[in-house]
Length: 445
Image (cartoon, rainbow, N blue to C red):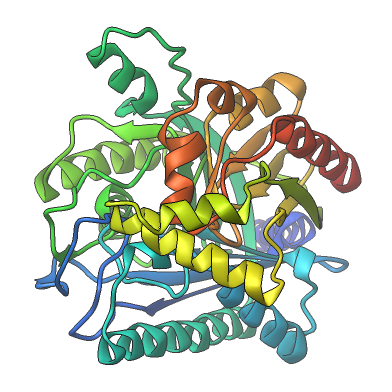
């Protein structure tokens, strides 16, 4: 009788400790694989619809709340969300659930084997009326599905313990440095191999969610591929969900703007990299090295003006005569913007921060952010555990550092053509973004 009484006290104590340190967590996923015919994005050389599916693409939502605050993280197996998509979803979720913009974060894996999201990268497309209709209809379906998956996750929250840890992967290389070496030029080759891992366990100790991130382009599969897949990030999530039954795996892309997987070129290599990453994540999740985080949440969101270098309308008139079809299309787009009085001198750039517990922070930056921003943020805040996620909320173009802007090349200059942007950014972009990051970190402390 005494033993039974002591056991009841023990389990009651365990339950009380769990409830006091746990969060309410809701998890959901929804299939966003496009119906055929589907037009892939990411590579400008593609000239026909997708020819099949290697594996499905997913949008996933995780809601984390305590008594005072809540945050929602949404991941997608897509190249990137447009401003229009993320804004419309955020507005609908605010109306439906009362979630503020600062509390909702989107991140895209940047697979180059997923569907076009209009109007992102529209310059690479030359669709017929019927093809454009297909792309636009998918974009609207995506908006509806994102609202649905967030709502579903929000509706099924249960107590869970959240823990964090770090591991690493080593298949990312600095692609700018690699390309330069082939031409006999030496450039700096910063990389960031750190892989943050976050797990959510229910009251039975079962892992229900695994969030992990890495700073590497999802471009293992190249432009001659016409099969829908999530590249290495898609394979990694599939592998984790196979190895940890009943868990949902969330991939958050880091500052991968100038980082490529190596080797690359085939679906098989994408699966190889994905399996490598998954093994590291799974090993850490069960290693006993994960640390529970305190029951605390905070978030913040702002936009800053990033200015473009001034380009005259006359220069775009000249570009209309270019033999490069993409330069021609960008010129037409810019001249239309000039004629209609649209903004062509700056971009309203999103910067977001999320703090989970006192132990972990995510800085979410829009666009294809180069790795310098991750490394500098960690250097500026050596005593804080921060993961800098690029490709967050919207992907409008590449976001170069001052170093990359000075060196020039694809990420600094020519990529802006394909994104339909006015031109390169002005110098000073890095300091503007870092100033915003510092303010966000201060606000969520």
